[in-house]
Length: 147
Image (cartoon, rainbow, N blue to C red; front, side, top):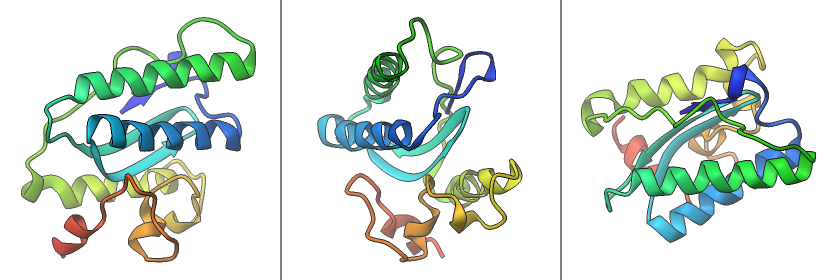
């Protein structure tokens, strides 16, 4: 996860969210990272990722760096966007994965952005409900298989 500097917004409009999700696709293709869950909030993001190539640092440096450059260009601003380096926790796939997914998907509800988790357009929750065709970078089968 990562948070905006001084808790400022890192997503201000639909173009920001779309640019971030496009970069998720890019790091999936470039670094072979698999996403199991995500939630993009106005001032922070949560990603549940798997990195078979042990390249999390490179992938997230690319994601945060390229996103910051694009955000700054779109908003005609300079300087850092994020509070610092991302925060990452190593999880045991089987033991904590469902709890982490639950936390990530309920984050917009907890923040009172929406009344139901499926109403937030920028989480992976809807794809777990099968309501839409999922993005290429999102892997839902493994987590659904845990049920």
